[in-house]
Length: 114
Length: 117
Image (cartoon, rainbow over all chains, first blue to last red):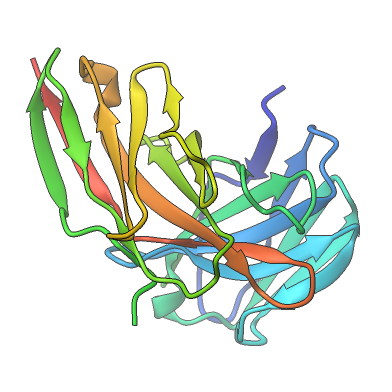
């Protein structure tokens, strides 16, 4: 299995829908991350979890709700999104959040909000 | 102000030639790390090379080398002997403290490299 797996790879949703993105890492890492990648903008860090505890929340709107039930799984729950939330959402993991250096990324979930 | 600046939105290189992708950074932290990632069309970000701020020598990984000029705050990526599979987006990133004992990566906007046959 690949190191970091994200599902679904593509998601189309209306503004009133509720959906979730899933990320699973098989690397034995202790830290997991959600990044947002919009066109022509740098990657934006959204959330950081270390040992299942949220250690960073970069002023992300409450319509994005992360969940980390264990160190191998990370979810991003989505509700009442806006069209400007359409982007590629990348999950990553690292040995621990105190290093955050060599991140291992998944292939991303491309979200389209209609 | 941008922490990481990549001034080249797109670059073209002929197969088998070398290419340099530019990156400048801004930090007041004496301890930092610089990274390059490759993102092919599949979407996955692939780690290429790392340079620590205290490293005396420029980092090298196979065909990748990092031209680290600390005084100029630049960390350019050099790809030698370009291959068609090198066509991708390339991102420069800097590790910086984000509070407490945690760190985060800040990314540049990226450079789209196209290798021509």
